[in-house]
Length: 279
Image (cartoon, rainbow, N blue to C red; front, top):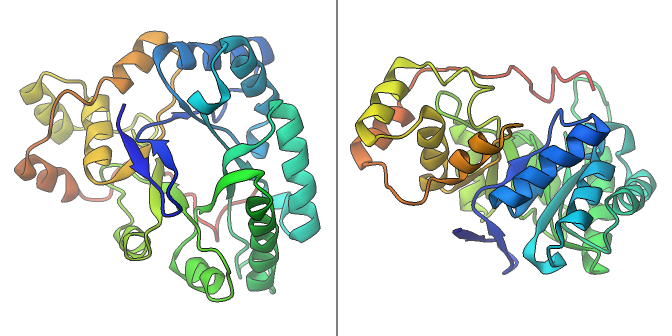
């Protein structure tokens, strides 16, 4: 599997497995175990997903060496702030049964629409992240769903710049302004909902392109993201689809087809943004 080099010199897999909505205990452990068996080495969880315990069990039962896996979690909105972030991290580490995280993210930024001191809240949360990073408890730190205003306000006082920004990213929803800012500042972009919550799977343009390459629409979406330098985080409960979603490194989408996909009108977006999120 191809690797991405982060700004601090560590590498991460160029595709990962998203665990959002994998919540049932027994089924959750099985789904995550199946993903590891399928070949995923980047597992993306969050405190808000309520499945860190299941991820930890699956990791332990896999028999994989710790350095073979890249584990991400995120601090929840209810745990923003310096002290709360430190406590939340400790709990996540215990639930995951790990000694360190490979990547820890602020799940959603505090926003002016709900927090008059949103800049201070984000700044204090980030200070806690910087401390954990400097103590060696996290290999890389970053943010999630940060728009330009949040990024600009965060990096001005920061001692360490985010290494990752995880945003919604898929054909028909590229968020080019945020992606361009991240590229200019050497921030790696991860893409959640890389299939547009499956709403892209019957898109006529994508179906036509997939037919010409002899691939599935999902494979085209994921390969497109990788070629654009974005790390997609697909999720599935089907072992067959897990394997299929990983099988994207044996072909290349042409420049002309990449441009066609890049030019798609808004399609499949979730509508979730920092100013509208309710959790």
